[in-house]
Image (cartoon, rainbow, N blue to C red; front, side, top):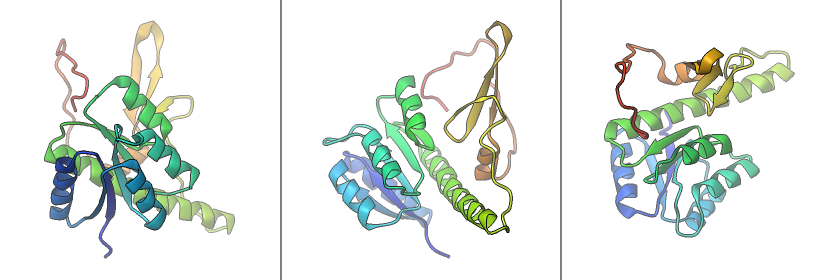
Length: 200
């Protein structure tokens, strides 16, 4: 079985070394790029199963990387990371095409969980693309619906539906369920717990 091939883009060497070491422990192969120029060269020369990119780079930003990937029809899912976590950055990342958003500093578990979902999503999207091609030939199978009809979706993983008096119904997409494969439990916050931006 082919090892997953990941491109990590960050201007901090210590972050890149950590990603390489942790992913290596999972049996994943990682190329790295310390700036946008190096990243674009690698993206044009190689095919990656997943890209993880910092927003702030010395010569460009993660949004330019996302734009390059979309303009060049590169199929690699992209995860955006940043130490400057804001709702605006998270929303912009997901609207620009990132599949996930990972605030820094992240733990080993958060990184591996996020990358595992991204790799699984990449596999699902390849199967979906193949299914669409087969559909044209009359042999297609089921294609995933991103979220319930009429609901608002943010990224690939969650949806919301505004209801009366300011309440919102929220949920996860069918495709997210397939990236995690099974739910073993759900833990809710307690009433009046403080919500802190960037927390899992």
